[in-house]
Image (cartoon, rainbow, N blue to C red; front, side, top):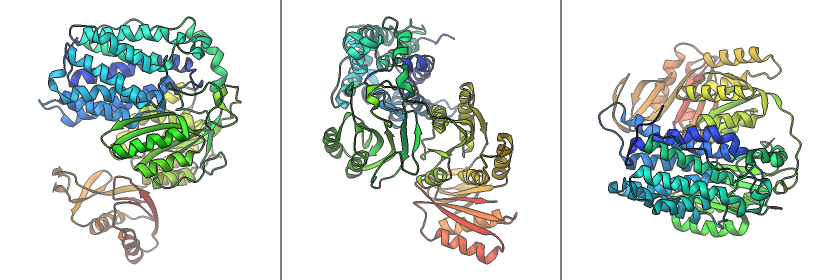
Length: 586
């Protein structure tokens, strides 16, 4: 259906643009993946761009949902800031990281001055986007997405008119620049393709045109025989590496394929479009989010630039996304620890030789069955991983998107996958991910777990040797037999099933509903536990968050021993999990 044309930027235009861009990248994802040859043939640039944009679009939708159905709507500043923040925290690979900075650059202009919502403002926003992205890359290379972004900004500066006119000029300038990229990078010319990151940006700008004019743009330019010629690099897509997921601020001593949690798999998230040698190169890609000040990040840039290459640092206002290729992954993480607080740490080992040569690698055999689970804290992520599951970390206020879950299912590299969302609000997201994975030939069963403690119960009875259907039935039964609760602190005044709560009150939720309102964490937790055990139980599972009182677990264990005979208790440390305490009763 054609979009209603708009002549200026507002929150609805941002929402429409994100939706159209996500659709455009979804349609072009496989094509972009296929032409990804610089500096290594990763075959995932389209996927990384899609996941980054999906995170941005989800953040914008959350802003609109926060306003509900009332007469008031989000402001342009609300929407563009959400878009930029969502892209930053969800950025995947170097292409996604640069896209996040492009969106942040636009937001810096559009959010600061409400009068810049017209064509003149869009011209300024596109220029700021291109310049800030180029500044974020340690050693920019022409013939990449940076070149395409600069050309779009140049073309926009020569256009007079409303947002639709400026957007179309930027799109046409980007198309022209994209078609010229093979002449700027020899590796693109040899493969007969245009730059993959630039191709993705053209798709995003095409969606911007459609958002303002209501008219779909013509297909983006390609180099002669671009997609057919991609077969020349397809061998490199089968190379093997080891990916390790961390979320911690402790020292990383070593990363190797012999580590206990290493999973050998096709490498992703290394689709550099900024720099790198065509032969040879560092052994690891390191990516993390970082909470740090500007001065600390400036020192971090210098240190990481000396450790490796392909350095891109984007963000600001205390939150940054860091990407670098190094031989010493531990040193790169330690540099982040010295600068601030790194988390969502992802280390990719370019295993089995030097992947920068683009040589052929043997594909690994798929496992028969795997479990993929969403978990709310680092402690549980470690627990699930030790139990053999592929864990997807969900931070408070940052739920994973469906594309991230699809990536996790692929990463599990199994013919059969059991998916545990561990959150009632993620059920539809998980269902969409399962459906996508099924189209790729993976048999996926979604168990609608609503809490991580239900996931623990399901994982405890998981038997890979059983028939798939039998295993799913047993896991579903175990999860369904587990009542769940959580203890949290109220952020604002609100009506609840237990009455009116004030900001700062301690809330005890049982099976998703507020059952207890209290002033003390331990007392509230005891009341919640008593109510749950009134219906009986054999095992109590406690998952204690970092912000909970140190004595709460001991007090609850003692209460169970004293008041409930034949009931066992097990305690786990959840880390930064949002809730102070999770409780499960089986």
